[in-house]
Image (cartoon, rainbow, N blue to C red; front, top):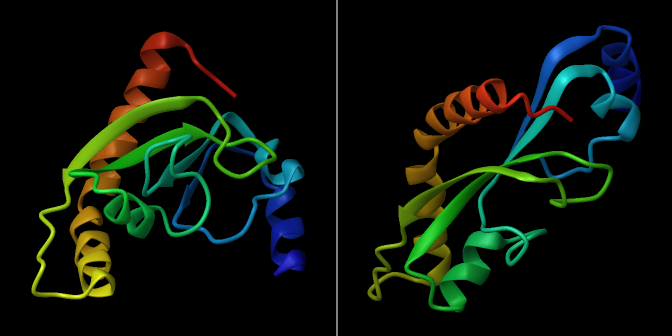
Length: 130
């Protein structure tokens, strides 16, 4: 995969978007984006930074999952938050926590393009860049 990233780094872009990416995007890749490098994280930041944010939020009794759109930095989930989109957990006690997490993940999918479009609009209107 490293050679793919190196090849991509040779092609500047306006916007770099990461969705549910399990790996840290290297700094040289973040610099490829002229305007912004955005990540959509399935948890409120900084409270649920890192892995398993939905499960941790459910275990903590949260009623909503926050889909956080934030600027990426060279550390996990540390960049400035651009937008928070709330989605109800609607915990189903008859199902396991794993099943509830899987359901919420699926329910979040349609929110990604909406959140991304709203975040881009906010970045443009406020002249926020990386």
